[in-house]
Image 1 (cartoon, rainbow, N blue to C red):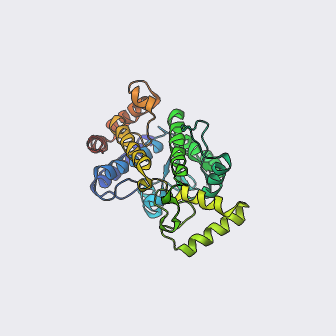
Image 2 (image 1 turned 60 degrees about the vertical axis):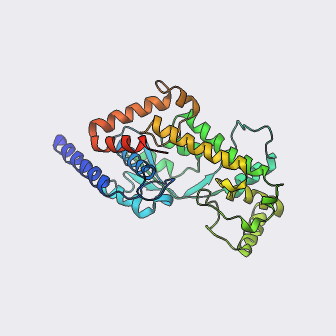
Image 3 (image 1 turned 90 degrees about the vertical axis):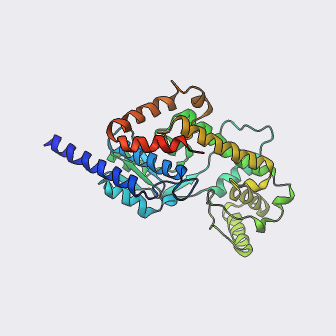
Length: 314
């Protein structure tokens, strides 16, 4: 009986993979939109990691319902017969940015401003976490989230989590350096971008900006000017138009992502520099090899699609 169930379930999974490869839909956030190698690769790998979770090859997998749409996240769960409370939960919690222990820059923003950025960037978090461990799902819904916690849920090596947190904060540090430059003086031209999505709608009027700043100053008990500065730092995350340093930072980050995909095509995370250098025995290398073997043995069509799109990822 167990064998029959396994054969039926495995056949269902193979059908889901085949159909998804033929008619994909968005199940992850992506740098590109549409039918591009970048977008396809992100979706193939996300499907693989759901299957890894389902086969208990990894503890959990996060579906970014904000980026891909809640309907799409639930659609792939339904196709794979993953049930709410048994196999997935939607989080309804708080997300916080992290001030890393290691801050790369010689000139760093003041500690009070750093704390203000963290407080202002605090936001709701409503993504889908999948796991075959029901007790784990119950526990995780009670916890507040940050980048380190999300990395731990997804099983990402600690070295890569720390590198991501440091790099994420470095973007804020670069933006803080712009506060005394002319570009930071006309705040009405600055618009929240998709990648930051922190406490703001995509487009706001000057009146809405003023109301937001005033409200946050009251809520946090901080000077209006400090809130304005922190807001500028946050909403310009990943804005290459702030200057040469921001442009080069975004360019370097994009190249790091592409290098990571080409080196370790079966991972969802950005490998740290140490993992990239040690492509045989690093934590990311070991994880990539294990996931690659699983995919090649059980879902060879998905394996080929991941390899093909990773090879042209840029």
